[in-house]
Length: 465
Image (cartoon, rainbow, N blue to C red):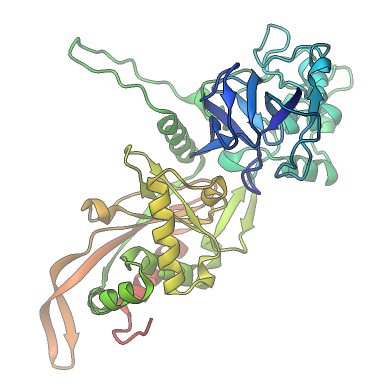
């Protein structure tokens, strides 16, 4: 018999870690090839990890709600033979250890102790970072991945200094590239540490029930004291609800939100869609909704006003080269998820329609890949699908703007003709743009949303698709 070390597979270029949600197999269970062993979560996307081998599960190295790095060993499976295991997605061969040697190996456990709380099995690089006395630092709630922590320990970067480095990751998280860039370009904070003070590292990583995001803002929030009667029902938020709540609160504490509104006459657009939708569905086997049309207009407007397609990194403005538009989608659970259409400006209307329909279907079926919710640069949300005429959406960090489109309603409107003004029944809708007033002023925000409306209003009734 031999032992197969199951690694957490690579789940996308921008995904470095995942949280264990639930183990579907327990130690001692027999496993067939491709059996699902556990469920994991990366940000808002849930995924399943299948077994690449058949055998018996003999040990789980991480418990539920623990954060695991991509490439880390998550379980041991007893299999037949002594040959090398299959190549994982990272290009490495999984290690097969003869059963006779397993008994002599020191036991590795994922359960934290008083001295090694949060230590990841097999990651000896982190020992130096986690065994140093930690000072009382106000920012210790900020999350750092094990890789960032190990680099900080090796470079002797203190917790206080690390907190001053702006992060470009999700929710403002400090990434490996952020830290390496900080080290290479000169560590501004090292001179401020007095020589007589001993170096103090980050605290050990503790197991947390919360999502692993930057939660420094939580210390400033005081929740109201609630009174409840016996008839009140208490409903615990699910995991995704907690992540969304934390993300939205962080966004309001990060950006200075301002919203501008425009009303658009989309009569030509509505009539054009009614004219072509049957032939389009017959030809492409896809239904054309308004969403891809809105996304096309947004992509065009972003090319006209590229400073709306930016992110903020401390006092730096990061101008994004790619136009990656996220579309907020409602899930059957009532939660929201934002799949991203990458390089939306490079797709024609047929391509946008197929991308929108595919992402929407797989979002509702919880089949999105982690990469498909990452790296958005602008977000569109259709509040009109709920019958709402307008909304004031919260910015999806680290972006600086989000557009809400309301329901399309027939209304009387004044038209200017060569024979004078007339009142006619028109298809009207509101567009509302929430933007970060730290970097987007009223002129840019207002002009941008007006430009989107212009593209929709000036729709060509004879457009071929």
